[in-house]
Image (cartoon, rainbow, N blue to C red; front, side, top):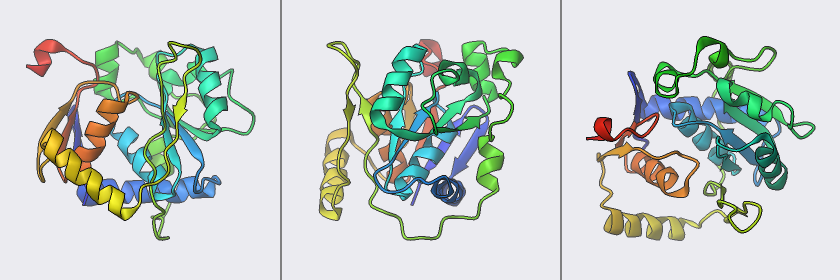
Length: 236
């Protein structure tokens, strides 16, 4: 069971979220993504982030959230280091990677939704998708759901801040069923996760803690409210 994600006036949940993730998994498999591969997510807080994360995990591959504050050189290092074969990015963030993409890496463009455009003051020109690259929504809908049994999903490969050198990617092996059950029990005890819970996600999803909180809210069939950008008054 998968919970519901709400961003601005948009909402998706349950069967619809799982269906789009399954369609995206089929598309990514067609691009050659398989178990142990890496798919970079250059995305702000958006529904597409969770669709992509679920799709990548379905194939046993690693979602790699990329800090969208990076310079092109910093982004290039992470893409090279993790061995990303596909990058999924918001249209306005594409200029960060346009000139530094490793050879053979494919790009899928996510349209910038209204709530992100408003929060970051992104004008129409900056939000315009680059020509010649697939658009996430239509690309996803163009695939039938992936019907192969899901592979054990590893956790997201989160990169450290790089304060003592280059950022370092933390690649964990997929957990066993016993490890997954123990992890869910531990998180339920420590963080108070409950079926049907509601959670407000205020931090960027390229950070490990917000990423984990959001992912487990959905695993507990909860409702996850995304803030496009932290705002103290709106939070209250």
